[in-house]
Image (cartoon, rainbow, N blue to C red):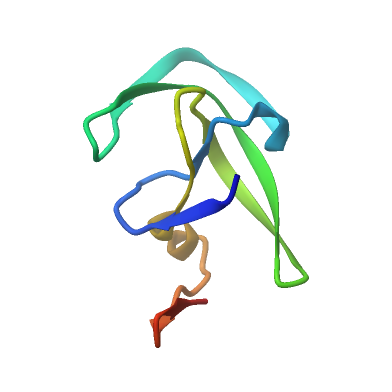
Length: 93
């Protein structure tokens, strides 16, 4: 499953437990609502490694949301980490 870059998402998240290189179960599920109204709960948090154009990227504090139907990459979290996100000519880099 690909990752979707989301400018409205406050956290990175995935439903795929196998993607995590480190993992910690949350003491209590964190409940939230997706933009489409679907309710879900995060049950864990950890690090996920991504390979982007021959560069290995570590996403920190990724939420494990079993009910998520897509992997979300938070633009805010990327920028908070010190990286730059640039949108131009119909592309993002």
